[in-house]
Each structure stands twice: as C-alpha cells, then as structure tokens.
Length: 157
Image (cartoon, rainbow, N blue to C red; front, side, top):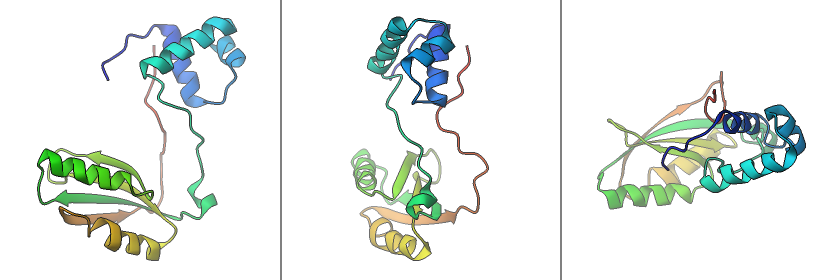
C-alpha cells in the first residue's frame, strides 16, 4: 500500500482508534475536536483507504488455554518465488501460527506460534511444520515472558 497523506485530525483519529477500537463515534469526535458526522465520514475514508484494516478484540491466550508461545525460525531448501508462496500458503492454513514474516538473511521466515502445552507444540512442530514441503530446518525459541506486546505503530502529528 502506498503512503497516504494524513492531516493532524486523521492522525488523532488513528491514535485514538488504535488505543481503543470500541470508542463510540461521539466520544471519538469529542477527543479529536469534531462533531459526530464529520468524524464518522473521516473514519469511513480511513477504512476505505486501507489505513484502518480492521477492529479486533485483544484476547488473553491463557484464558483459552494457550500457555505456550514459541518463535520458530524457518529455513527453506529453495527460495524460488513459487516455493516461498507455497510455504506462506501452508502457514496461512495453520491456526496455531499467529504471525509469519519473511526475513532478509540466513533465516527465511520467523513464525509466532501458540500452543496449549509443550506436548501439543511438539506434535504441531513435527506433524505440520518440519514435515512441510521445502522446509530445510526449523529452530525454535520458547518465550519465557513478554516485556512488551503493543500492537499497531507509533502515531504522532
């Protein structure tokens, strides 16, 4: 997506929505110095432009029994575009993989994976990740604790 030009009100809208996606339009309008109708129009414009991609609830993984978070560094045998896309398609089909990023350097992809426990992660690793076509190696690191987990991007005007 190409960079979009934002004015200071757009940036305030984005910052407020990133902080609290459940804020009402009336509350949001008051925080950014608009009345409700132009605030809603600006929000719709930001959504249509792709600057706002969606609204999500932040779920506590432990509440659903996901006590394990692992980062997996995956190297592929081939980096041909078709092989990269095939791996990405495979990863998209795996619900336990929450993030997948292609990297520049020695490792091809880094994945963020959640699991209920070590045994279920091990089963996932051997049956769905290391056995996937074109996977050369997988190195994993189990998280011990998270010091910062802040979605979005810094916004300032």
